[in-house]
Image (tube, rainbow, N blue to C red):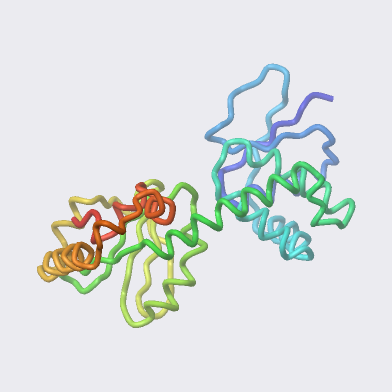
Amino acid sequence: MALQKLIYDGSFEGLLNAIFIVYQEQLDDAEILEERFYEPDFFAEAQQVYTDDTKATRVWEGLRKFPQFSASVYRSFLTELPDKEIYILDAVRYVLKTKNDKDYGQPSVLKLAQLTKQVGREKHRMEAFVRFKRTKDDLYVALIEPDFNVLPLIAKHFKSRYADQQFLIFDQKRSYGIFYDLERVEFVTLDFDDQQLKEALHQEEKHYDKMWQDYFVSTGIKNRINKKLHLQHVPKRYWKYLNEKNPL
């Protein structure tokens, strides 16, 4: 039987539907691919996966019997790596068959654990380094470009921390954001960039930026500055989020 390539829409629900098909059709030789990475293959049969919430829920409920593992599946998906589905499918098959979700001697289970750690580090860095800027409409906005798609993971943190202010955290790399309206957080899609934010900023923001810079300079002791350690804790790619480093 030819290799079956299951092409899905790139959503997590779509991935769960593809896994459902693997089990429903008892496909021993199957490969799951996000449609943006798919290239026609003469030696393989392609099948389009249509997202069905009911099927996705059935698969997810099965995975949730292993809480730590199901979290690893989701976080590995958020890496957006083109080969993530290979490891996810193999690990899912192994765990559902053996009921052993902590066997890190199994290559795919180990790979998902490693990817989960990478996503977790990016999540914590976003929570630590995101800086909001106030607009003329009293909306607090932050622009980010994380390596991984961590917006779904940081929404709860910011809703809890900034419960009394409306905010938007916008992922420029993926063109979507999370918006909090003082009641709930929802995902939004916008056409938004640095220049638009600069034009929308409240006049006081310029003074805040200057204060942050002055404070940062005044608290630094030149002969005690450890640039190597500083870069280790605050990598240069995150400086653009910090008022004291790179204000708008």
